[in-house]
Length: 320
Image (cartoon, rainbow, N blue to C red):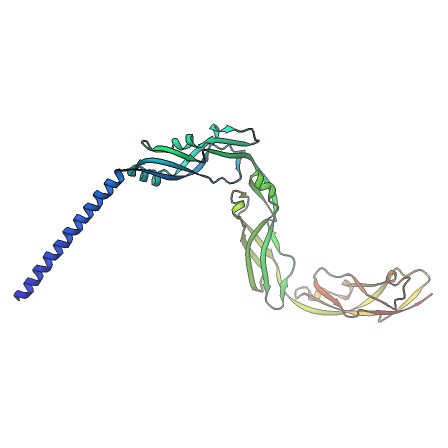
């Protein structure tokens, strides 16, 4: 019993000693920090440049981002306050000077930095000592949108007609030098797999680093397309002869050819023999020793996606 009380008493004393040590350590650290921060230091502060009072019809050309490095001398307290609470300087575009070069203006960095440095901070050096920039017109242009879709269809399915982008054109606004170079705007890259239904998809428009200062009339566009299942059909089409001279008669062997085609299931029953026209052109064998025609398909339905003429050579017999 006595040993237990003694152990508890010793542990309490040791705990108090540790707490006292920690208190003294913290106080010592605070005093040391205050002493250090009261000393004078020389350091470099990086400050971001922002531009104000830009008229609506003007815009900064090239990159708008810039920084200024100011070498300053002050106490640690003021140095910390400057670094953490005032890291940007403003350039009033109504108070800048013009150079001899067209659309080029400048402002002295010292003047800009002085307005944004706390009192009792000595500025030793500013780099660069002068800020140059160009002001141009804010331009708007209409450009086409190109999709970056990769389409993979379920077996037997395909596009019924072409993929449409809505809107097909957008308006872009921004610095004249950037807008003039822009020819097209691309959508985000996206792959669609196992497609068996109509496409109705919203796509973001890409804006890389060189385009981030542009404004798009539409941030997104839609990709729209009808998708249908396709099947294969086959028809026998009578052959016709084109450009046969007067006074001549001709016999073809065979008189008709087979054409194999693919079309959507919804249009399959609408397609007939009369929708196709296949010619043999006399001009192709005129003044030659050719013994056969190569048939040409000159008319077929718009709903036919692919076709194949089975008979590649047509023999003939001409009489005068």
